[in-house]
Length: 267
Length: 301
Image (tube, rainbow over all chains, first blue to last red; front, side, top):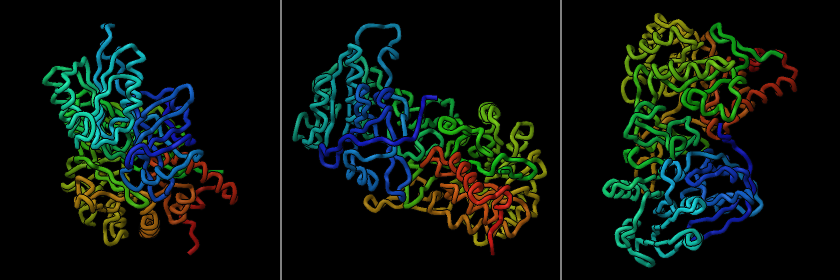
């Protein structure tokens, strides 16, 4: 048991931080155990929309018992979320998924400090904030590459508290024109490990890059989900080895992931 | 107060069970609910060999429900026997193993392997709308259903529940065919075949194009079919389709269901099964119902 539950949570604040991107803080005791890369399910209040929407943990403030969730309006459910006000009670399901591995788990016997490059693309940027916090707190260094569509550089200032931030924009309106890998190559950044979250084409490119350079990479994947707890088998991804649960090269993103070592998944 | 019901000679402590495919083998939801409270756990459909299932996206939400096209991904009967049956055996609940296949031989192989296990009942899935080859024909043509049911009955050591498809013209014809072939019980409804289109991309939302509709949206159809089927046959009917609350479950019992299953609503409320059981108990107390069997088919015509 890792204590998954469906429970109520109170909204502490919510504001729009870029077009269609919202920054939501809720009071929840889940903050205490939340790790970067984990997510919660947020339920719409409209009863015609049944399923919890998976939203990644952007920050977990253990002292205040608060979770920060930065999400994008992707449909009617999240559109409803955007209208929620401070003080409202909402229903959440969590904690879900496994987070990014801690560096001391990747290099169990090697105590040397490591250099991590974090790559977030679009709505894959929010989990990088909590991840950067965790990496810095262990005394490691992080370079953070954030890929945006345009000049609305949401969370950039927050990320700068924990590492050097390089922005890439598709339209070239800020930072480097291009994507996260354009920055990696132009700046010739070095990494002992890459950790990333973002759209599938970006993750595929990172996987190729990491394999060429022989750098371990951990990728957080996304898929349409129903239950969020590993029962429905809706959100599977192809794996390179037969996993012990499915026996058919299908890992459950919600429970076996969402973070996978790049070589484990066939994306 | 008695909440016990009997299905094909097997006593359940209450009539609330889980719908196949929505509850894994109980492991995932045992973090939320005490499986000892449930009348039975019905496992995800299992075939003779592992099945990879369909490509993603496999699920989509629709108004008041959801579509799924998982394609019966399963690890195969050997893993179920090694891993899932011993897990469920730890709990004081009945174990119903749902069986799927592409050919009659596939089904028979699984049924035979289950003969020596602790499974209490077998539920035969002849009604999955998401598997292309074969299987669904068994559930949509009365003579095919009769044939596969009698072959399974000849091999099965446990009582057999045939799970019927709602995607038929006349549910009573299917119910009668299953009964005539010797089925010990029937369960219904499986999902209704549906489709969702993304109007911006002009594509199907599900990779499989079609998917099975479940959730509260289908409940009135399910209640009607349970009513029709239970009045057409003398074997027990297990009712399901969009049950979210005790009120919903009682509707099915009154319509003629001897037991009920909670399906998609587990995804919405992981405590749904136990809440339905508690709700039925308080309804019985409130209305002075001594025996739950009074409710089964207790509809005033």
